[in-house]
Each structure stands twice: as structure tokens, then as C-alpha cells.
Amino acid sequence: MQRWVHWFASRGHESHLITDLPGRIEDVTLHVLPSLRQHDPRPRRERFKDWSFHDWRLRYLRVLKWAIDRVNEINPDIVHSHILWYPGMLGAFVPSKKYVITVFNGDVSWRKDRKLINRLGVWYAIRKADIITSVSQNLLDDCRRWGAKKTKLHRIMRGVDLSRFDLVKDRQNVRRELGLGPGPVVLSQRNVAKLYNLDTILLATPEVLKHFPNLQVVFIGMPNSEEETTSLANLATALNVERNVLFTGTIPYERIHLYNQVADVSVSVPSSDGLSSSILEAMSCGAVPVASNLPTTREWVKHNKNGLLVAPRDVHALTQAIIALLSDDQKRCEMRDRNAEKMRLEGSEDMWMGKMEELYYSLIADKR
Image 1 (cartoon, rainbow, N blue to C red):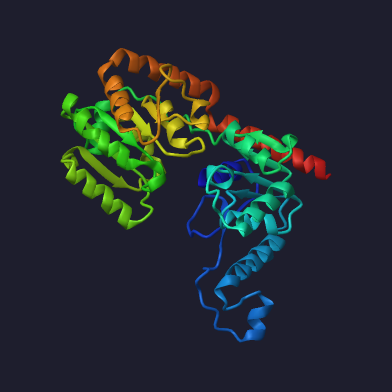
Image 2: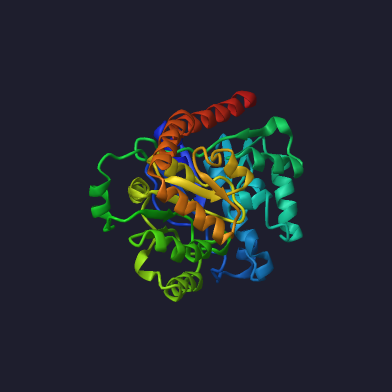
């Protein structure tokens, strides 16, 4: 999200981000939503003017009123919701001249057990939107099942900053900078959450270690909960692989490319997914992907051509895939070169954001 809004700000567009996470993005004005849990001590009459109620079932109304007031003050040409869960869903209910949605996997392709009110929100947002974008054709097809018109749908990748994510000649210097040894590196860049099956990677590690005793498995990702992080650490200990496993936690974006540049294999095996940026970043830097055999992933990773595909949670298949790539330097290098060329031609962030800019301009032209 930071990269997206900063790209447009750097192009001279006035960019505002309404978010529930405080922070700072260069040349972007952030508007941080009030906390849903924050108690409002004002008298009832004053609270009700701002749709502020103590009943927890109505807590979203105060935040929505706040968002509406901010959008009225900004008076933007376009309101763009990134994800149709909170707080992105607020965009569907604020005043806007033109409305754009970028849908993610969790919006339209899974969590089918979501509450009726959530399903109605998605249904309403998709029908209100003037443009709907996503990173894969598979997700756009799911949007059509929610009632989206085909003419509104556009495949827009997030893309990769190719000036940062590229092949590096001296991998040994980068390894030393990161404190990594000389053995092969397997990299996972997914957050610590059950959906991403990080335990499957750990379960595959003991067998891989029999072939590559100096193996280093590096997990980069934001912990979803302390409990899940502790569970993974305990599993690594139980498997007696803790010396070969590194949990870095969250890494600043400015350093993520370094881990990709020294990795031999990048593993991403979620049970369900849109197309992960981490796969594209790995491909740009030469880390060959082993990924879940999902429709979104197959749009970029062709089995045995530029990576290997496995069924989610199939420990044996994942083990064999990692061993196969680490055992065949020539095949891995060929895949690396194919991926670098593919990303150069099709994966540039500037190219894809330029396409998005054209879509924004088309909406403003329609408005006029």
C-alpha cells in the first residue's frame, strides 16, 4: 500500500491515505482512523451527532462518519478501496465522484462463511465500483460471480521495483552482511498465519537437511499472533532443526531484496492466495520459486519451466521439490535466468502503475 500511494505521489498526484495504521509515507497525507475501541466520553447529544454510540454493534458508524467527513474535506476525484475488509470497505460508503476497488484473495475467493452483512457489503461495493482491479484473472473471474460487469474488470499487477529487486553478482558479500553461512538458502516471505502453511516448510526441513547439512531456512514475515510464532519455534525445536532455521520477524522493505538475492529457492505454499508479491520479487532476484499449485500462481509460475508447483500441505512433494532444485545447479540457473527475463518484460512496477494511472485518467475523462 505504501509503495502504491507513494508511486502516484511521486508522479505529482495529490495522494491521501485513510488507514487504521499510523505511519509516514513521503509526499502522502495520512489520515488515521479513530480506534474502534476508543471510549467517547462526550455527552450523548454530542456523540450522536458524530454517530458515536456505546453499543459495540454500532461502533463502526462513528468511524464511517469520521471517514465521510475526511473525504468531504479532501474532495478527491477518485476514491480507491484496497481490500474489501475493514478499513477498505469504508470506501464503498463514502461520497465519491468515481470509485475504484482492488480486490484481494480474501475479498471474493475464500472466507465463504463470512457474515451476511459482510457479504452484502462486498455485493454493494462491487456494483458501485466504476473500475475493479486485481492481480490475477482468477480473482477477476470470482468478481464476476459476485455480479461485477466484465467491462469494469482489469488485471493490474502490483509489480516489482526492478531497480531494487535484481540479480546480484557478489552474493557472498550480501550473505556476510545478513549473517548467513555458505550453505544453500531456502526463503519464505509469508506472514506467520495458518493460511500460509509455514509449518509445512518446517516439516519438510529434516529430510532436506539429510542431503544439505548446511541448509539455512529463513522465514521473513510479520507475526499474526505471538501464539502462532511460538508454535512454529517449538515445532522447529521438536524437529531438531532450530540451528538451521532463522525467524527474522518483520524486515524493512528497503532490505527485503537482500534476502531474495542470496536465496537459492523461495517457498510460498499457502492453501489459498492471490498472487503474492513475494513470488515476483524472488523471481526478479534469482530465487527459484516453489509454490502452491493454485490458479493465481500458475499465471506466472509454469511447472518445471521457471519453478516448481506443489499441492498445499503436501510435505513430501515440497521436500522433493526443494531437494530437486538444490541438487541441480544447471536447472536452477536456467530457471533463474528465465525468471529475470520474464520480470524485466512483464513485471515492472512502473509499467503496471502506469497502466493504473491510465485507468484513473479514463475515469476523470468520463466525469468531464
